[in-house]
Length: 412
Ligand code: 3PG
Image (cartoon, rainbow, N blue to C red; front, side, top):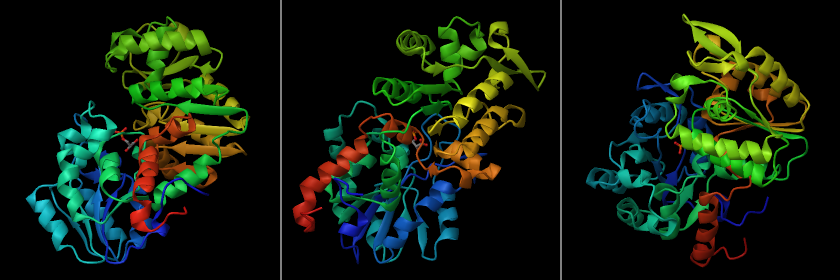
């Protein structure tokens, strides 16, 4: 596939000092145990290409305020067990300690820096793309490198300094994960119909934006809702979900207003649960949406909904899923997610499971090989397939235009 940006194959890597932005954001329990290592393993082909370079990895884990917003020290331990080369970790991002460790690096060695989201400018929401290059991290690290590799496909929908800032200051190429994901996903840019998108998970803000884009660009025949978006849409339809369910979502009322508008314009495309599973005395309890009285938390889609969603999935030609349908970490509420994944495994056409959590669960269930493409991206995959322009891809293209002469690759 011909891209408008450069890849690792276009440049010389021998003895080069290379900064690589990866996405190894992983499910973590008890602050330190990595439950699933797919994203860490996914970067191995890129590291293999860089075996004769000095490689520094920049990555994030979760977001400020979340329970799994932790150090990357454990990720470094996992990486050490996977590669046959020295892997170092430093609990610094661009301070003197980090810069000295970078300068001391030898060819073949890998250094993982600390969680880049510990640095506040990385997560500041008001820095315009062109100013990301002027952030202190980009200014401090740029002089230490010859090349920037962006391999963080799963974060390609974010415009943050570590993802797009360096593309203005250093020649930039895409890594192997980025290249593989875009090669596969671009094939379904114009999806075969009927096309269904399954949107679950907890990131209501991101998912609502993507949902609007999917509808605006006419990418889906049906959208099946799960996860916390269900609370928003059930409320918008007038069901009694109650304060307990509303309080799980910040800015709930404004999301409900958006949902009402979406339902008015595209109600025929949105499939909502007809029943849900709630928790009563620690047990799963099925209730139809009409019977909701707002007293219990909604933790999964119900059985009738599972049947309805499964039928739609097996009869579709393109199925893209992102985010669990319920609180699948609790065995009693994993049913919806498990059955939807099973229906995808039974679908004979093009199926894509996106995102750390859902992909990891498909692995645990042992059905990942029956899903056509297990994407490392969650929100990024949905955003791409929804027709959104991803900031990281745009930045890769801009960097190629700017640095192609310097790199001696004018005809790419
Ligand atoms: C993901 O898990 O989807 C990526 O790592 C991006 O994370 P974010 O949604 O916190 O930016």
